[in-house]
Structures are given as structure tokens and as C-alpha cells.
Length: 203
Image (cartoon, rainbow, N blue to C red; front, top):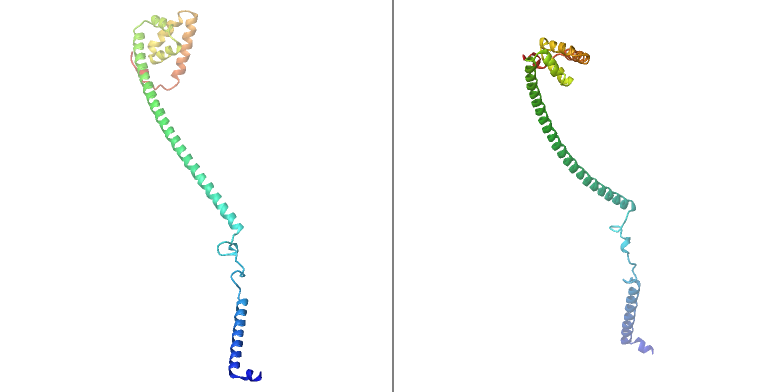
């Protein structure tokens, strides 16, 4: 037995077996010590702070900014609508103003035309009255309203109007009272500076 163990071949054989056994044990230990992919802890995607981190205050700020942006957009639209309404109202007011201005000009022309016609009529009436006797003129004045008679007396010269009033006062008590009233009205009118050119017109 000792001879076999001391034989060179036996020593080489035992050395080789021990070498292989040692290598096998080393490889097994290395495989058991290294963690496998399945044993490694998985990193959750939510735990990655680079892009998955969420801040509640930041979310509130973003929501508030969105609300303010939407509110601003709504107010901008409302301002545009109000601007359009104001422009339309301004155009309507301008149109109405032009119409009123034109109507006023037409009215002024008609008033001037009426005044010119009234002056012409008064001139003709004064000529007619001047050609009448005081009694005849007084009888005609009895058929006219006080305003019109006052205008005619005002536009006549005193040497024509005075005899007519005197003739009216001699036609009875009622006519005398009317003549006195017309004389008072004529006095009130004469107290105002005359601007009518007919006041100096000759009948």
C-alpha cells in the first residue's frame, strides 16, 4: 500500500484529482456568492427622482396658472365683444347725430323761410291797413287775434296806429277795453329794443 502511494504515478494522479476538486469548489463558491439578476432588488420606476418626482405645491401652482390663463383668455374675448359693441354703438350715434343735424338744418331753413314769408305778409297787411280809414282798420282789427294785431301795430308808425286805436275805443265799452289792452301790450313790446327791420318800413 505504501509502495502504491509512494509511486510517482500515484502522486501525480492524486495531485490532479485534488486540483480538479479544488477548482470545482472554487467555481461553486463564486457562483453562490454573486447575486443573480432575479435576486437583485428591482428599482421601481416611481422611485426614480429624475423625472418621476412630484411636488404638490408645484402642481397647485401649475393649476393656478392654467386657471388664470383661461380667465385671461375669457376676459380678452369679453373685451373684444365689448369693443365691437362700442364701435357699433358709436357708428349708430354718429348716424343719428348726422340725421339730427340735417333735420335741424332743414328746420332752420324752414323757420327762416317762414319768417321771410311772415315779413312779406305783414308788409302787405300794413300797406292794406295804411290805405284804410281808421274806422275801417279798427273794424278789421276786431276780427283778428290780439297777437296778430299787436304785431301789426308794432310795425306801424305811430301816426297810423294811434288813430286806429282811437277808432277802436269809440266803438263801445268792450272795444275800448280791448284797445287799452292792445296799447299796454304794445307798450311792453316797445320797451324791448327793436331788431326787426320792419319797424322802420314805410307802408
